[in-house]
Length: 405
Image 1 (cartoon, rainbow, N blue to C red):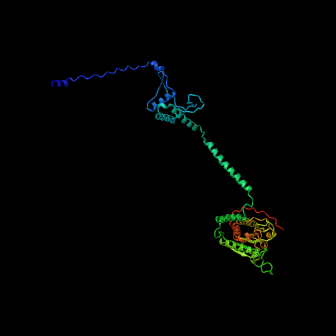
Image 2: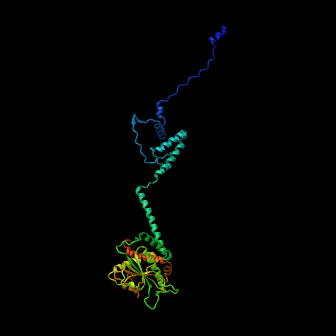
Image 3: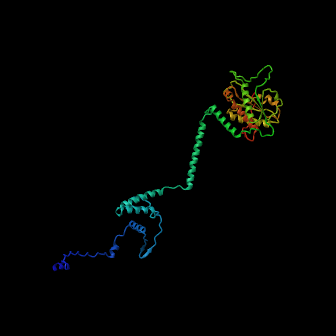
């Protein structure tokens, strides 16, 4: 038992582990070896400086113990060749471009230090793209304004040339008579809507208008019961056209509130008749005068002293308004029978008078027989123009016509 206690008191000796020989001391290169070591490249030095600055270190450079103040970053005026070999492909690089620095740091972190060649190639590609974008010309504000003005001027000149060519190459008969008449009808309707006189005349006295339906009433020859006027081969008479249009003129002016009186060719009321305006309505005959025999004719008295100015103003209004409303051309063929019309000498000298030939029964037959409302509207517009010069403005200049013999 004592032997057992001795085992605990003095345990048997364990075999000793072999001792590791001590490491030899690390050789420290002399200072001259560090001085003779190859200095890092400019790229590695710049990369190290940026890395230290990113970690919050302040990098200072000493030259022979003196602190070198860093120069303010400026954009490089001359492009830097990134390749070792001079291949002539120069890329403009700016060292202070934050985007390039960030791209370079990102590539360093992702690819590692062992992929220096790939990083350099990627940086060179990105710098090349940004350099191309910087080299793109940017128009200044004055040049941009001039460019815009030149574009607008070019478009305007082209539009004028196209419209001029279209006008020169378009025949006068390109649009049909029906189309032109319809267009004039629309224009006349718009004019009526805009400048329609008030329902009641605003003058102090009641405006009185006289309308004579040519060849109506009792004939001049007592032996005849009826004066038909001009008669066509198919039986169409001038009297029927004159009466139909005169009745429509009467209704149109009465709707305006005027006092209108319809009289015959040789009505007894015409003797010393006094009114604000008097108009006699006729139509040209049915003979074949050629294609030129178309259109309307308006005339006033050849010699009147007291109302000569009013007669001319009435003549201007009738020429302009009747032509614009109906679309018929003005025919310059005033005869002596029109300028010396017998009614001109019968009425009072202070009554403005005029006579109108609606058109030719042969060449204007469709208009005279099928569009009588339009003809009446043209006459009513002419009378309104004369009575309301404050609303209507005439631009027609009267061209004296030599009476046909």
